[in-house]
Image (cartoon, rainbow, N blue to C red; front, side, top):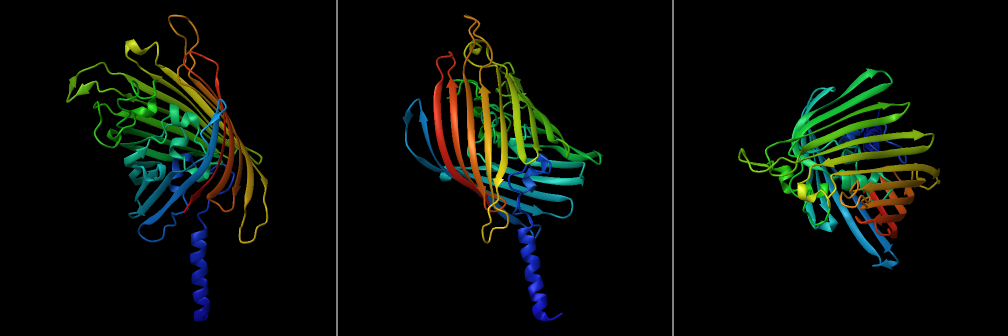
Length: 399
């Protein structure tokens, strides 16, 4: 073989390595949700450390009860990934998120995995709490919808990262099914779940800088997820997350009654022919001080359901497999389940939304999307619903 041919072969092999880790368009992930942080195109196992990331940008206009503030353009997030395999059994990965055009900088993950066997992996660092599928598998380029699901951001406070450690692994009880498990101890949500700026029980307000540092009450939260993946039905996951959110103990001294929260979630990813289906439902219970029961919710629930289908595969020069898809999303959340004890009237504080999506994926890992969203919001007293309609256009891409 001539020197010239050897050179051309070397160039071809490098090009194949760079092109290999692409993401299938408009189809549910065939790998377990658990491995989402390693299913990214920048990881090519070349060299000591790999660098990658993703970018989201969009513009939107929304009209609420006939009133609009006009067009708004934003870059909600710019994320950087780092990955380094330190031998055959140890790997380190991290994600730095730059939100709102640089106004906020946060560490989303920074963890080390020590692989004893594929069925037993020790993990520690800043972890993504395994509550629901979206929290651990939420990268923008994987979705045809601009906004994140309501249940995944207001009931499950995604993106939820905490300092913690635990175990995860994959089991194969049969040739046709793989089972994954995750179980972790972490700092848990902190003060702010109640008596916050939202005027309601709000689990996302319990996220503070303390999640990466010292636990505010000395009692770690417990989280876990079990999922089964089979070709016949896709992936079905069940997860639970529980802990105390208030500062009830300081330096070993009990100063208040411990009040806990608990979130239980069920998620599904499957397909019916060409139609990719994905959804998640969650129920939250929160222990409240006695004087807040009438106005704050002790029970919350919500769900979302996505359906996407490819409708056109245009032939475009220099693009391997571009695809246009249509999508539909249903969102619903109830932040205050139950009735008023004084009047017996049903509590409101609910939101429902329906989103229609048209997306174009020129290459794997990049999506351009147009969404039209209709919403209805009811306040705590159950007054006539506030109607909204919004149009969003944007893109998301790995790099």
